[in-house]
Length: 95
Image (cartoon, rainbow, N blue to C red; front, side, top):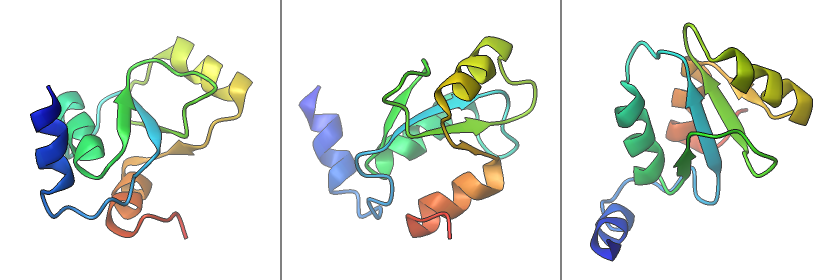
């Protein structure tokens, strides 16, 4: 419910992903799927499982879903590897 959102917002984690909708596909080295989604939420982002025109970034690990990648390419959504994802979490930027 609402309590989870409030506790995430006050967790002290920098809101580096605020307002971003992020999809994780494939296997990441340092995070399980649910862990990655929790990290996204912790930093103010929205983790979804479906790629849409509202998706800001797609994090691609090993053996990503082919249909997701096809949709990503069709929509021209930025694709990040795990290192770039970590940098985005840490800094809020891809610079």
